[in-house]
Amino acid sequence: MSRTRESRGVWSAISVASACAIFVSANVLGERHYRRIDVTTNHRFSLSHATSETLTGLSGVVVVSLTLGDRDPAKANLLQLLEAYRGASGHIDVSVIDPDHDANAMRDLLRRTNTDLAAMADDLALVVEYQGRHWFVTTADLFGADEHDAARLIPREERAVTAAIRAVVAAEKTKLCFTTGHEELGLSASSRGSIGPLGPLLARDNHELSAIDLAAADAQSTLKACDVVVAAGPRTPFLPLEAERLASYALLGGSVLIAAGPTFARDSSAAIPLGLGKVTEPFGIALDNQLIIERDLNRVMPETAGTGFFASARAHDVMHGLLGESPKIGLVSARSMRHQATQGAAVPSVLLLSSDTATARTNDEGVSEWKGPPPMTPNETRGPFALAMASERPKLSPNDPHGPRLIVIGSGYALAGQTFELPPVVRGLAYVTEGAIGWLAKRPVLVDVPEKEATHAPLILTEGGLARVRQYVLLWMPAAAALLGLLVFLRRRSTERRA
Image (tube, rainbow, N blue to C red):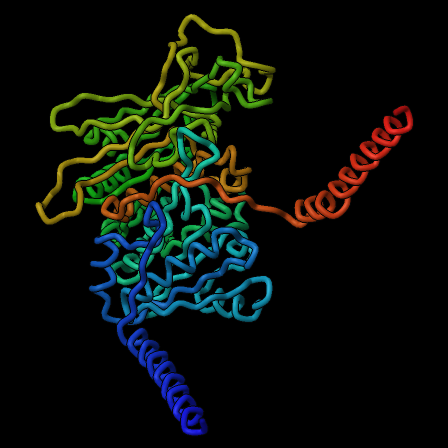
């Protein structure tokens, strides 16, 4: 009997030891041969071939810092996706910083990337760093709207993360040169009219901002270092020499963004040319010297007398995600433009369009007295009018990623600081400007990273919402159940007495 017990004890010990050995071996093999299996129906956490190629080409460590709070519904999905990145490459280092509890770590991150905390803390989702360069991913970059169902979102986390990795690994800072000398918007927030919060946003996206005087003696050499030249809301005409230098820069492979409303003479109310015909004509665009008056009252902004209105978007890479009814794209004091078919010119694409009922006039006489859209004059022409256009010429070399590019937006407010401070539902013009700069700055659109299937939008509860849910669950629902039970009890009691 004792031998039987001893035999059972030995076999038990062997079984426990074997189980421990199997457990340890499984962990060692799992550590050395890491594999993840995505069992989601839409394979949301499986990396595409394009992303795998990007990760394979890494030669140094890329640090990805996740900066979403625990209550953000996007955090859990991002953690799963970043785990897939880390599993696919040993060069990805993921760190998690909770801005609500790790204030010092968050402050150190923003100090290390030279970023303004006030400008970035609210919408920052990820920071990608590589060899002193950095790239920011915001919460708006993670999802796209489903045009057919407002309650569903299109996950774009992989596209955003892969784009950020490619940007910090392969690209230097993009230099944006803002023209001066024509009463343009200033780069400094302290100036009377400036680009305001757009400056920190551009710096966040690895852009370097500088001013350029096209009339200066060294302007041509300065232009060579510019990736994009921006004319931000000029209110006085360009000199012929300035236009010629800018046109030469553009035709030699440069990219130009012009955001300008109509310009009026100082001594009269007549519209005058901006002086940039030499720049726009090779791209097939002609600027009209006229002010657009929107007469569709459903589009007119309050207290603008028809000079401020909401435009319609047209399909283009710049307009990605802006083809629906929201966000609205509002323009103030806008000019029109048209396709000018000249020999050798490119064929532009329309980005923004007015309504059919809009009209155009060549002066703003009495504009301060208008209480609403002014009466039509015999010289006014009817719409629809093109309010923004994009154009690209043929490549100068087969190895170039694309040819010379030009975008014209018919309102100087496209880069104004107040445009980027509007509520998201009416901030469409700001998004158009961001898309235009990205398209001109030769930032590749990640069409090789496919979009995932649309999913239901996450439910986000604020502190007030959580308090209301707690009140309903702990107070009102039990009280309603108790009241219903009391009514049933009284009803049954009364019927039993009568019986």
